[in-house]
Image (cartoon, rainbow over the protein chains, first blue to last red):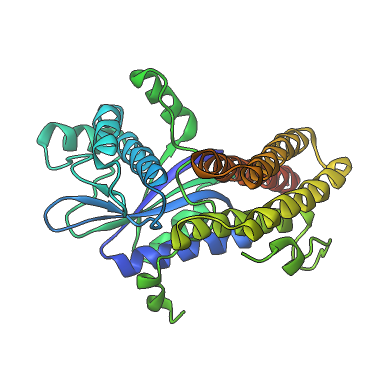
Length: 191
Length: 139
């Protein structure tokens, strides 16, 4: 089954351990990872996607794509917010998702709790991944051992959400299709 | 950017990875190297583009040669991946022939189709793994 998962951790270092663990599961053949990204929410509530410094067009694309995906993982109500927020973060290298999904707003938080449970608190980080998995236990067990909380939505349900926004469906393209770890985080592993 | 396919020749090694797994790794590396080249140097150079045309052909030939051993779903993804790899090579060739804005556009298209190729190879790997796991699940 093709799913999008968001694994929430209390800090960035753990998020990168989670990212590494996902690719290890892929390497072992337990799951197949199609793409990943790491997202942080700072103490002011802003979202930031760790991305390569790259051409402004690509930075914009990553921002739009990840912004929309964050919104979708928060449930149907988040789709429009996420896309709009993603567009707003546009050209900023480093893909700042400023207010892409304001989960502090009560109605949004309540809806997210009901639909997916995805709430990224201030100071928390999350690994977002597009995976194929025959069961959920491999990711669940591994992330539990790293103190991560797994949220999952099927790709088909996200495609259904996309119809809300005239079929805008960016999610396949903007996650890194390999284990990308910015150099500033690589030191967590001694690389 | 080095010629990734030469640095990691795609050979069948059942102890480590099969052809498809290995092709995915090389395609991932190619996409990463291409985006790194754009990010770190503000653009790709002739050698990068020549490597892209060479490596995409090696990957395409490799996965195409494995078609006979694959199930229907995996075959479909492989065929789509080959289409994207050929498009990547075409965009890289076009970038080599052009300059300025036109070259930049071709490079962005090469990155986009390289990403799509990795995606399709990854989906082929997933389809193959899923098919392999089903007999065990029935036990």
